Image (cartoon, rainbow, N blue to C red; front, side, top):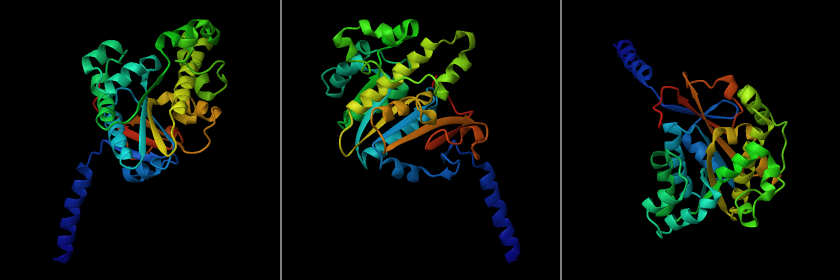
Length: 283
């Protein structure tokens, strides 16, 4: 009878496991599974966290919000994002301080098409909890100038306009693997100027992260994963600008099987959020 009950229990337990369909799994850079709490505790000890998202991934956006909420309970948190451009910082500050409403903010800032669903919750959380939120990206018209004419095209900007980009000349290494990969991915559509346009974005984000760091604070920054994977992009520029310790990276990947991290994803970041490839997209 005891054996029968044991087999019956294991049968039900096994069915439960077979029916379990987690939406995501978190791994460390070695490819070992970790839980959310251990990731949260480690990230809370840092100065800067770069959260690399897939822009249309619902799980990434949900975890960005959860991480912001939970880190703000453990740290003096500052938020920053690629999705807001540096020359819209005044409008962002006015919204955060209730000087303008959402409609006015929408009409004055160049917001991404998925802002309402994916980024407004983060900005509104900062607003409700009186947190600073930094618009870190270069104004897109200046990135376009670099794409067409290289870094030299920025020299003609006015002194005021140069306040919205990283100080010139920026460090640049065309041999970084992720920059070289851009040319490979783009094929005939790639150019050295395209890589430089990516670099000026990375450098500007790093510049405004550094400019807004405060003692005993943690800056959580949201950006597309390509800007921080493999510790390059924004992370490379942060190191050029003086960050040595306290920098952590998170990335988002998609797989058909999330219960074992694929070899290509090992080492991409300190923490890898592996999402079921069938997860609903936000656009």
